Amino acid sequence: MGEALITGASAGLWAEFARQLADKGLDPVLVARRHDKLSEGKQQIESKHPTAGITLIAADLSDPEAPQAVATQVANAGIKLHYLVNNGGASGPRLLQDPDWLAHQAYLTLMMTSVTELCHRLIPAMLAAGHGRVINVASVAGRIASGGDSHYVLSKAYVIALSEALALTVKGQGVNVSALCPGFTHTDFHATAGMNDIKQTTPRWLWYGAEEVVREGINGVEQGKAIVVSGRLYRWLDPLMQSVWTRWMFKAQGM
Image (cartoon, rainbow, N blue to C red):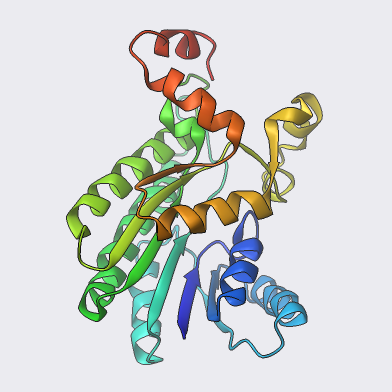
């Protein structure tokens, strides 16, 4: 049927995306920094989908040259992408506290520039084919200004704005672009980022499973929604966060 390229194939939502898209008959193209993580990911997907054709691409998306290298490998392999899932991410340094600017620069490249460049390099082929789906994994946190000295929220706000603009740009041409905005989600992201304390101190009712988040993301992009807020609670809160009458309350709470 086609392929689905999924970045960040070492933590977070990648495995659930790979499983659900493989269920649709798409062959996963997994992108991650480390070969060992890619091999583990391949075995994990093959255990559920033994007939899936899985392509592995080792690339560090904090390297400015990585998106072009990924696009080149996709083209050289004759891969016809039906889905692009920009899932790569990390927690990141603190803007005012961490003195090493190169670390900040690499983080911004990972979280924003690489997403933009992969869209720039891969969406035109989808347009030429008349079909494609792009999911840029963002966050509910990107829907509201927040303190905390973190690039994470700022970068997700950019990804949301990028996705909305691209969705309008390609509208009516067979390609849909969505920003998937989950809230707290049960994945290994927090453990990988050294943030397990958040899971221990946050009420359980704020958390959703990866299966539900990914399912809603796929359904949303298929329906042509530019922004997909995942989770009933967060869909209820989002209009309040965007309203001129109530937005100040969420900003004051530092959400």
